[in-house]
Length: 355
Image (cartoon, rainbow, N blue to C red; front, side, top):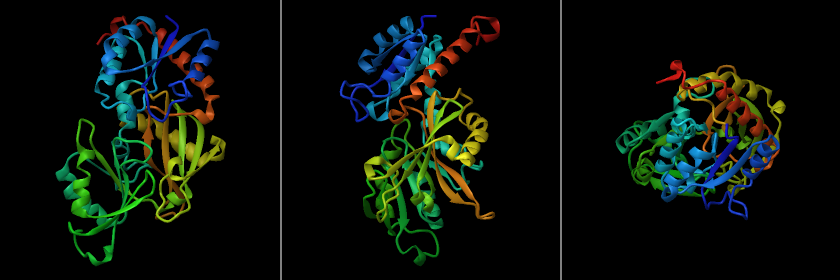
């Protein structure tokens, strides 16, 4: 073993401290050093990809990806490099395909029909499907559409048909919509045709898609973010939208108030997540769980029992921040070394592991 870990970051973005790297990366390095390992931050760029690849292959036992998707114009080259590293026995934390499977908005649709995601959830990958299906889902009530890219609520729209009661059949293309973006809770009005055309850029590119799910009115009570260290629930963040008209965003930028709780304060939610992990893993590709990931839930009411239920709204796995819980770096270091110790116990050159 080389006893060295490389943490990948990307330059720029609002997630950096005054020295240009993430505030929650240096504590991981310090925690690994306490345990007799070394670690460093390497800033990824496409133009230096070959050099970064060779350096990592020579120096590191594992990488930890801390690249916010919004900091790279195109992630294709980055993911290609990570796949090559994993193929050459550098431990991927997480594996690039796990990052995509968990982080993409369609991860929610892949879990529909389970205890944590209702059946009334759809993903659109092309304009024709969006144009055909969205008028029908809008007939059911207020919807939330989420683009696959972006961050801090950008491209997440609450979509409401104005005067919906007057439409007896399919919602027509000239129907007026009230649109609220989660980025800052601002509202706009467009007709359905205009909104459909507005959404075209969200569908473009290799990972273009739109998630369509029902708007849950109890979002006003708060979104509950479950912070995970692999299969362990380590912290809960309760994010209550601003107390203003139309506010549904749970981002700090939009004025939401955050409260930091322990897992013990949310026993029913923690138990629901724990029971769901095998199903989440299976439906999202059977990859190892990401090192650090989050699952965001909104309260709803079961129509039959009238009891509270928790509905999954989103999973994040690409670059989860924990600046509020920097002590978590100690647990992360322990988890990294435990994973590498388990890997070192298996000789991948044995015939049983050849592929």
